[in-house]
Image (cartoon, rainbow, N blue to C red; front, side):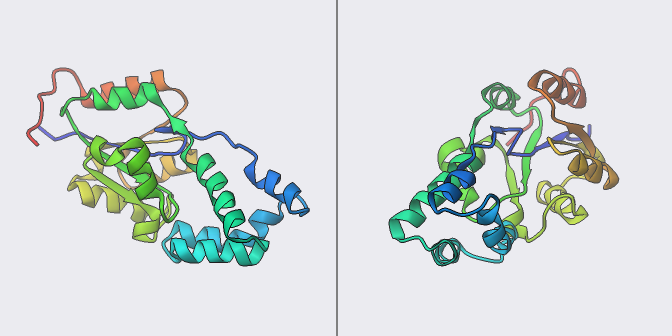
Length: 208
């Protein structure tokens, strides 16, 4: 029997991450025009997503470009992470936990430097799945095919045996182009049904 694999995205799937308006609030506080925060920080944000910058340098660049002191910079980053981490999608997380060894599980996430440590502390994703592939650690963002190849390699699985779940249509289509099965997350009910369909009835528990 082919071992089934399920790979999930984090933001918008395992985490509920609505926009909080934090950047606009900081623009108002600093008397900056709308969009100025992300415009000034654009290259830093991009570098952080692919591992081109460390957390310390991110903090230094925030302070320098937005003219914030130490406490201001820390508060700014706290607001950034509050939106980034969101809240847990409890229903889906409970379902994934309840799979009980019936499949191999992984995560593939477009991320930001520092995400692994924070998400591990808050959500314990490292205990939920076998492998987590973060863009800031491999230097590649979805929908680049290399991101999907990396997660399949980490799980030692052929793409066609793997179901990938993401809330971005472009990423779902890119996963399918690599040979993976893929599902566009819209709600928990349809996603759980798709996982169940992928695993099939009566699948035995796997040894760890």
